[in-house]
Image (cartoon, rainbow over all chains, first blue to last red; front, side, top):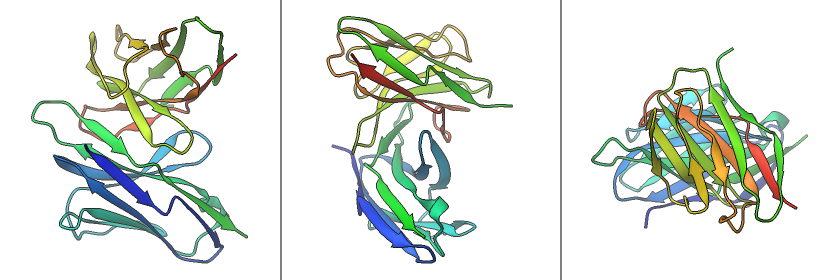
Length: 114
Length: 112
């Protein structure tokens, strides 16, 4: 069975701390891995990773994929209270046909205290 | 402004009632999706549609139905056969099926 596992499930830090969120996966036909940030409502897209070892950066957020060890990390440096959210990891499967399917992890709830 | 809209924001369903959740996008995306999110769970795919007049079951399609009569609209009906409908429902769209998905604001469905 395809699965995506995120850890930790929740995390509390103080402003200015650096955090690392983990996502490991076991899937039969990997195409890409995506990170989303979910605040009150809809997830917003952060990164898509398809190649191992290439870091993607956006401001204080960065992410990298290891396709050999089947995991990805999302780093947030100098955290701010606005970073408080649930961070979702999803793996897209690469079927032989034209389908696409995302398998989501349960998310990591990050709380940043002032 | 381009985007995905869902309505209503909150929806209450009585026992045995069918309810329909709306999802509209003006991004000219071909593919649209419906997900369900339960507390402490990841998102689970209910149905998706690659193109108008075509849709496919996802992982948890039982008790749900969809239609795709127009490119911009993908309504989801939660039927009385869905025994545990209380959840947060998210609609998403992408340019094509295997491209990045963007989400609407969601509809929270509660059972009276």
